[in-house]
Amino acid sequence: MNAGGHGTDAPATRLIALGNAALMDGFSMIGIETVRDATPELLEALLANLVRREEKAVIFLERNLARQAGPWLTHVRARGGRIIVVEIPALNAPADRQSQVDELLSRVSGSPPPMPS
Image (cartoon, rainbow, N blue to C red; front, side, top):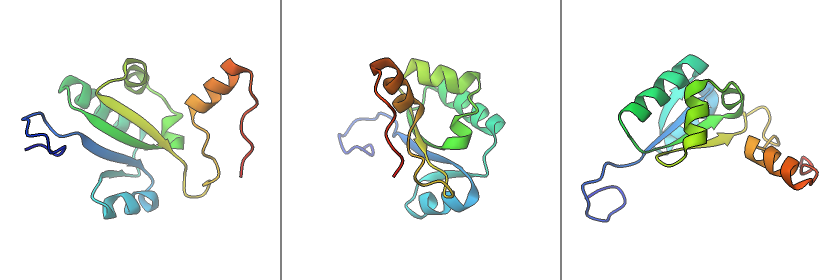
């Protein structure tokens, strides 16, 4: 039985977090695969491997790493589907929660960006 409990032989979705070591401690404590002090090059290699192997994954990506988009991150974001990228704020900037999607929606709708809390 797969992780979803549906009785199929479909491979489980990988949960992977990439960011600074201190932030990754919390993710590893709850059983999520972590890459401590990840670099943009390491992120690109991981994404290329996931795409080529057609794996399903949810990637929790520290904001500063998410803002250094390489070709594979750009491809995954544009393609959607098997790999979902979720941006998370850095420990030293917890109020910085606005993602690139939020910024795009604000520009398209003409709404001002939300006030920081």
